[in-house]
Length: 376
Image 1 (tube, rainbow, N blue to C red):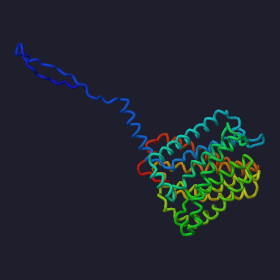
Image 2: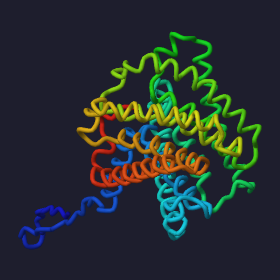
Image 3: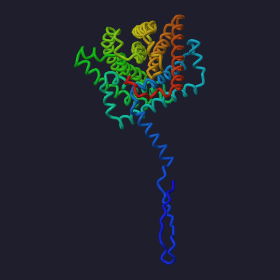
Image 4: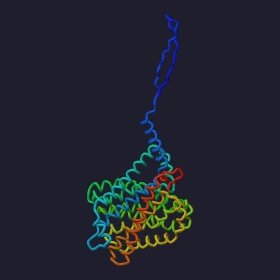
């Protein structure tokens, strides 16, 4: 933009006015600076609305990657469905694993930036009785991604180092949460316990399975016992107040699916520790199957939460996937018609739900970082 100034002077020789035009250039806003400002404002807005509950997405994708890996490693005498997965091109699994890695790395980077720019919000989330439980979710996701990796085997040093990197934060959070339960007693636990509290248990069980896969049986048993001891306390507490689901907003009731996620992961962990899907693993699988049937027989519980898309919908995928994983191990051990039928149904549900969530998320990206989105 240009600005013109007219100055009138009198020439001494001819007394005629002389007009001098002075051209002054003002600052022009740079399109490059403007676009950077918009991007920066959008990023700050996203960081302010992001919370650990968004790691539901990575939980779902990383567990799907582990499921595809296990199905692809089926033995020759496996069910036809598992043999079909073994025949799929390896690039399909690598693409799924890469998608899980990209989503988890992106969410982790955004959350690190949130810690830097909005530390007070992160602190409030850490002190929240629901938000703190989802701080386990990124570490669970990394452990699942590590177990499903097509590039790192459990016997390598890289696997061991990464296992320590991902397990130490889980143990630190254990000390914080379980220490409060122990020192503050029953009244405190009854006040803060909710379905998302089971993520603390799942973190220990996933870490136990990862340790068992690399042959660290003592470490696996240690983490398994730590998780199961607190799961028994938590299960009794939640079971007694199951009808009090109104403590969570209606749109967040998909987190009730975590009720059967914990025993499913426990079944998988014990299978890796013992080396076979024996009676304790079967008992845990049957418990998770019973809880799953109990929840889906009450569709009215989830009716309000399904009216409008929300990131909480991703809470359906991870529990279904780990239940399907447990059914795969159970069918391999039992080799019966009914066991394979249950496996087929659960695998189909897991695939369809995960695919549907990807489609809904792609179609409703504007619904992802809402101002009124709560911690869970």
